[in-house]
Each structure stands twice: as C-alpha cells, then as structure tokens.
Length: 471
Image 1 (tube, rainbow, N blue to C red):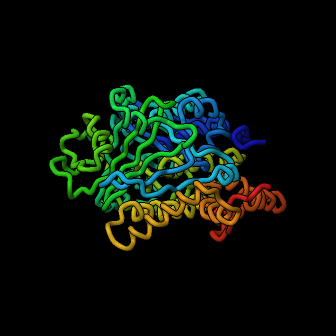
Image 2: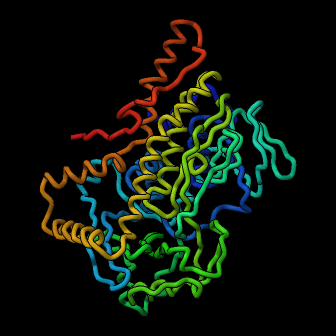
Image 3: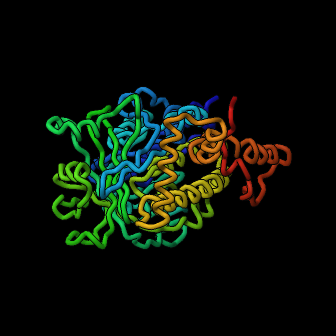
C-alpha cells in the first residue's frame, strides 16, 4: 500500500505552528494518515508571496504521489535546462541541461510553478483532508507536559503533539532546545516580482524571452560579480517570475527589516545591467525583499518526550528562491507523514520523532551545502575562475547540441542522482523496514519496550538514499 493511502492504527491530535509550505504539506499528509490536525499561523491570511519556485524531480514525484498531477500540469511548466547569460553584456555564456533520459531515471519531471499556485494547491488539499487552519493566531509559548500552546490573547490549545513549522525564528524551536536560531546576514537579499506577459505585447524581444518554448524548455540565469537574476515563465505561460539577488551594501534607504512583507520601490534598486534585462526589471513598480542569512541546523529536532518536534526552516536552514527551497519542505512533510502513518502505540512517539531527524538532517545539510556552493558559481568575479566556469558551460552547450554519449549521460546521472533521485517516501519506508519493524518485533518477542532506543546514525544509503537505477 502506498504510504499516502495508509492510515495509522492510532490517531492522535496535532497542532502545527506555521502555515507555510512545510506546515500545509505536513497538515495534508498527517490528515491523510488519519490524524487530526490544527494549523496556527500569525499572518492575517494565506501567504501571498510573489515570484515562482522550482519543483525538481525529488519534489514533483512526491506531489504526484499525493494526487496533484492535474494541478501541476495546469499551473506548472516542465523545464530541462538553464541558459547562463552575462548580466553585463547579454552574451550567452553556455547552458546547463538535464538530459531527458536522465530526468526519467529520477522518476519525475523538473517543473517551475508560481509560488501562489503551489501554496493554494497545498492549502486546498489540507482543508479537504480535514485540517483546521487558523490565521491571525500568534503562538507565544509552547509546552510539552502536557503538549499545549498559548496564543497572544491567552487562549490555550491542547494536542497530543506540537510540530513547529514556524520558520527560522521558531517559537517551537526555543521550547525544544531552549535556544533560538543563530543567524548571520549573508550579505545579499533577493528581490522578487511577477509580471503579466500581456504587458510585453509591444516589446517582441521581451515577449519572446519570457515565452515558454516547448521545443527548448529552458530558463535564463543572468550571472555577474556578486549578483544574479533568475527568471522563468509560470501560471501556464501567462506570467513571468523574477528573482534578483543583489549585495546589501549596494542598496540604500530600505533598512534591515526582513520578510516577505517588505516592499521596495523599483527606483531604490541599483539595476544597471544589459539592456534587455534592464527593460525587464524596470517593469515592476515594486519588489518584495527577503534577506539571506547563514544559519545552522538545530542540534535537537525533538524534545525528550517526543511530543514537540520541529521541521522545515525551524529545524534546518534554507535559502529563499533557490532550487530546493520548497522541495526540502515537501520532503520533510512526506517523511513525517509516512513515519506517523505507522503509529500504533503511544510509546512510538519519541522513536518516530527521532527517526525524522535521523533521516532528514543529513539530507538537508547536504542540500544546504550544495546551494551555498551554487552561489559561489553564479557570483564569481572576473578572473581565471570565471573563465573556467564559462568554458565549462559553453562546452556543455556545444555537447548538448551534438548529442551526449553514454559516458557523459552516466556522469550527469552520478552528479544529480543524490539530489533529484532522492525519494522521501522510500527513505521513510526503508527506515521502517530496517529499524521500525525491528523494534516492533523486539517488543512482541520480549513483551516490553526498551528503555532507550536510538536509530543508528550510520544508515548508509538508507539515510542519504541514493535512488536505484531501474532498467
């Protein structure tokens, strides 16, 4: 039976703090597993963040398994390549292409989608699955014994388990470990906007740039010295999402306030780029701004009782507007939902909570390191390193035109299988087969529950979960 169809023998009450992608996806999966879920969020209403988001194969395969195929095909667009362009001259540097045969081996398509469409999709699914979602509910304190939260107005809400999906400045994280997340400004901010392609009718050059081309489904990345712009077509081809990364030292007069509610007028942003990109960036009157921070993973993702647990950005760092931003949160939800679809006894709670961290921490650390390294690649300044990068990208573009041989295909697979080939459901199911069932059998044989049970950290391929090649 698919884990998304399995219902837990023991149904419990969850409170999820935070109604972002992680919170909504988790609410949906836990409801699917037969649990009762209430979601609390301090925002006045559903997230209306601008821009788009990537859904690489490791995310789309989860969403497809959840039954979202029709909505993904309606709102999302498949892509297979990114074209690198000089932010100063407009010259095409090269292309990074994911070959179709390689993507097929990962088990799903690489897609891009408007953030709002993904959010609304998960919101509707969570509501339809039975979740209760309350906005304007600021959680001021969280307690484990018994599990409950207190709201800003003094209301106390009880549950069997509290899950913190409330972002990097998490209230639940403080309750779990007694500490808040330490953060250091990275030095850049992302400026995000979305434009209707209708406004480009009188500019054939920009109209063609922003059009989705089925015969070459790529998206542009303008790269420069400590800055870049990434953009792609969304909303079924009707809109174009823009994400510009700029050094904070070059943007004056907007303060240090952080968050998706920070709106910056276009005239305050130092866009001085190649003409085509310049015209594109001049269209939005305002941009949403979110700062980049360097953060560390939480040491503990659950408390001793197993009744408090953190996930998403509350547990591990994520950069905004990068390739795996939403994917890691969707994976978190699938792993947690799969684990708790196995719940049959109260004494399993701490062990399943510990398993969640054992499975997710190595994965999210590895992805964060890759995303950090990717910035170094797109932000490299003039010199030998940039020349080497440009030569490599140009070589990939030429090889792509000629056709790749089996050796090069295998090299690309080896490069991406760890990332795109990861299957969150399989990772959780493998853990259950190797360790969860072992504990169940031990209890059945001995008639007792071990006083302590630690999932071994060295679980090899089960934790990192390299996908198997299926011939």
